[in-house]
Image (cartoon, rainbow, N blue to C red; front, top):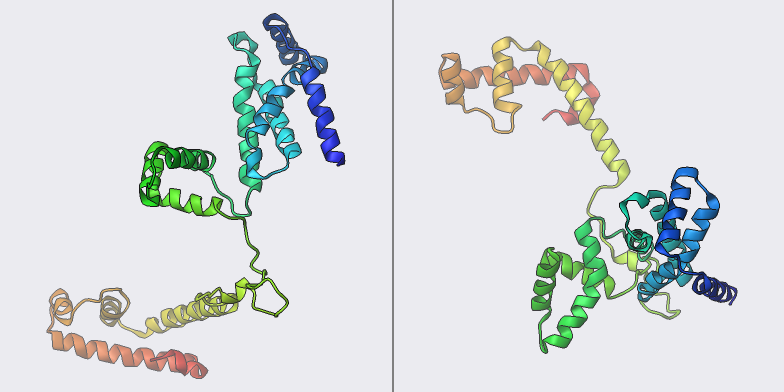
Length: 288
């Protein structure tokens, strides 16, 4: 009740504020820009609070408190006053409208849902125009399917049909808590989160795997030092690449037969196994 009373008082004050003539508005804007005259700023913003309230009312169907929308619009009004250039001979209301709307829209995008949306200009246009376009298409075309409607909206707003479908599903219902029970009774039913399946490994498993991988790499690099240059080349070409070379291709490179390459590879692998087992006898499970 107190907030409603405060809002009514604010609205009455805004509507009672006198309009500014072009010359007076220009003089006040110059005083604020050049001298930072707070009284001039207050007079300009007070005269345009009715514009803020009018703009906020256009977004009340998003379900956010009207007081908050007005406050955010006032922030946009102050931003417009800080950036206004009176020498361009544009009315302040024309310039401020964009900043007021942008501030209110940004507030709605930040608070309408816990899931951040509308991060691009196209997504913002989709968020704020989807309901209006859908209502217009529903009235103008009876029996229009959802697919056809999404196609029309996507074309009008220059977004994909998938983006339209996703935004429509987000706007069709409120956020739901993962801790909310599936049944609205006291039967002790499971929460929504109990049915969310995560196939990714747990954080401690990921850390453990990462540490083990680093250890294996260190042990392997140490063991490779026991190989000769030709053995090392064959092992690298055959075993340490995503697509290993064939015995025949390596034989051609080294000027030996593919059978000789196989023999050198077998001997090199035995040397590697012996080096690894000698260095880390309790880690035999890592040597295959």
